[in-house]
Length: 184
Image 1 (cartoon, rainbow, N blue to C red):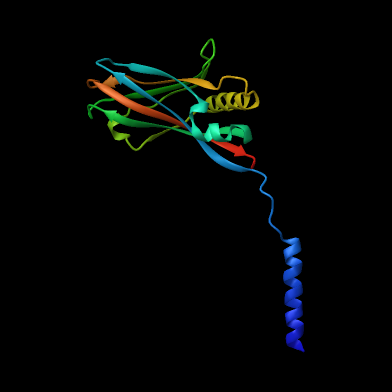
Image 2 (cartoon, one colour):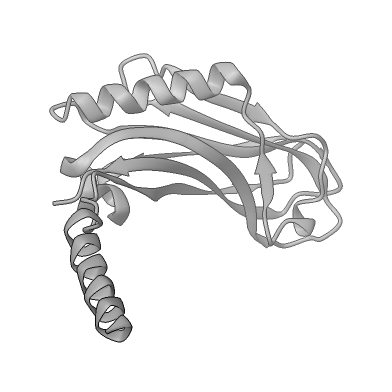
C-alpha cells in the first residue's frame, strides 16, 4: 500500500510540475556584431594615414539581423597589425570613426601610446573614452531607429610619431557591438 501511495504521489508530482514548469518563452538574445576596416600606410614619413568608407550592411551579423535588432551598443575596440615590412619601427596608432555625412562628424578619435606595430599581430585593445562611447552609441541607435538612413562610416587608420623608417604598414581596426535581438 505504501508503494502504491509513493507511485501515485510521484506521478501526481510529475504531472503537476509539467503544467507549472513549462519552457519559458525566449524574449530576446544578444549577439556580437563585429565591424572592421583595414588601412594601409606607406612611408617614408613621420606620419601617414588611410581613409576607408564602409557600411554596416557589409557585415553579415548586422545584415542578417537588422530587422530584429531591438538595441545596439558599443562593447570594445581593437587594433591588429596585418603586415609590417620592418619590425623595428615604432609610433602611435591613430584611429578615427566618422559619420559618413556632409561634414564627417567625428564619433571616435583615439591615439595609442607609442607602440611597435610588429608586436600587435595578435591585437591591441583600444580603450575609448566615455564621450566617444556615448557618441557612437547615440549614432548606432539613430541608425537602428531610422532604417532609411544610410548606415555608412568613414574609418581612418594611421601611424604618427614614427621612429625608424616606415616602408608600409597594414592594420585592421575592429569595433565589437552588442545587439539585443528579438527571436523571429
